[in-house]
Image 1: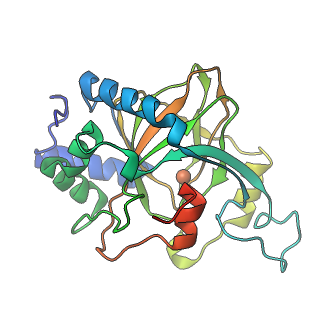
Image 2: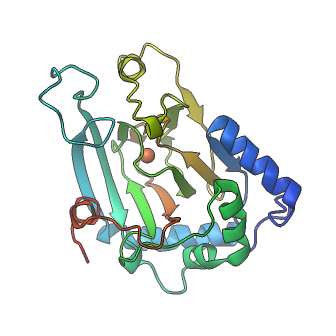
Length: 254
Ligand SMILES: [Fe+2]
């Protein structure tokens, strides 16, 4: 993998800066991290696989859980948001895909391990979830939500003509102590607080801490598909997706 030279990922001082930035802001964007060749090849592969994506249209709450009748219908816990997207599963991605080279690259891994503070990085044991391409056509969007995993590692492959903007409100809660941040969530859903917009381009490496930051992707505008590669790195080798989650994401469990 050719990481661009302006990102000395072997350099300890650089690694520390990246880790501190992620810690301070909940997000790390390294511009032009991947080469044009990698972006191009991955974007072509993504376009060819788009027809095989599993498209879903989900109504969910921001916590990605079932509604709770203990709360009123308009309580932040039960406020419905809509997400629609297509997911291209790992087993559809070619063995010689540049995305696999990136995933397997040892220097990239040790850099990420340091930045994320993880002792070791493991793929999912299933054949679907480790490298995934998420695609969105005109009108598709991800509603406000918190991620269930601590961090995501992504690379945009293709930007749409308009929309598809990543918006977020950082550090809204501390999930580790069970904080639900109902008041703040309500203010975001009611559009009463300013939200940040994360600008990134194809080829940028984006690491985002999504468990405590509320975030969404606005509807795609125009006929160009928004396409983004998502790399899953788990600290524990036994981390796995439930069969139900696999069916929800990919329409199949294997
Ligand atoms: Fe997310």
